[in-house]
Amino acid sequence: MNGSSGEPARAEVVVFIPAWNEQDNLPAVLEELRGGLPGADVLVIDDGSTDATAAVARAHGADVLSFGENRGLRIGIATGYREAASRGYAFCGRVDADGQHPVSELARLLDLVRADVCDVAIGSRFAPGQGYEDDRYRPSAARRLGIGLLQAGMRVRLGRPFHDPGSGMVAANARAMPVMGVPYTSGAPEVEALMRLDAAGLRVEEVAVEMRARASGESRLRGRKAVKLVITVAGTLLFFRWMNRRR
Ligand SMILES: Nc1nc2c(ncn2[C@@H]2O[C@H](COP(=O)(O)OP(=O)(O)O)[C@@H](O)[C@H]2O)c(=O)[nH]1
Ligand SMILES: [Mg+2]
Image 1 (tube, rainbow, N blue to C red):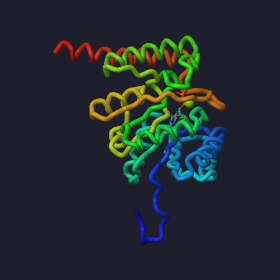
Image 2: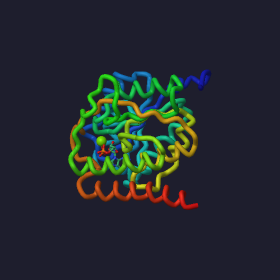
Image 3: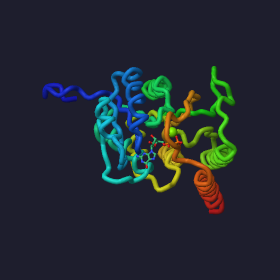
Image 4: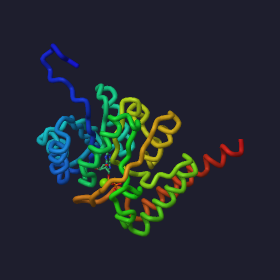
């Protein structure tokens, strides 16, 4: 891109990582990215972390964009896609900072997008896939209820099933980045992204992947908070469908 200026040419791919107080998990994630996707740039969206997240990320070769205060994941995600678009990358990936997402699986998602099989590929723990056991993950009862409601809502709203609608393992091309780069208003930004992509006529593939358990620390979705969130989202999805039918 900057051929004659002496600056290193920009990579074709950027992988961004929303991170909030993930100093303990980031080193392994960043090293795995370097090994598995050596040609990709990495951008950590440090959302007002009060630990050493930013310093650790830089020490492991990542570019860091820090917010002065915690603005929440829905802004963190949108910022990642928006930066990928405005910095001129052809493709971008997103993974969690907690070590849940194997880089080898993200690389498969990026391959699909690069081959133009789809505009967005989403890694799914629950989708059936060749070589993957259908019930390879056994979430807690509360999570199962939440996931079931979301699945039902997505099927009604989008007319097709999504098995893992909250997945944060994503690959996207430059057509999809700006669509996903606008701040989210819903408490379930990944679901809102799917609705936007559908409205924009973009092609989304759900791909069976393996995921790991979070390496350390706590998930953002726990217990009653998670149940409340999914009921709200499923309700919104179904309600909009019902309103549209009546017109
Ligand atoms: N930017 C940003 N990232 C967050 C925030 N909360 C969590 N994250 C990150 O978002 C990712 C997903 O969070 P996680 O707790 O793993 O959620 P889960 O995988 O759905 O259980 C991780 O990389 C977190 O560090 C936040 O408020 N802002
Ligand atoms: Mg996680």
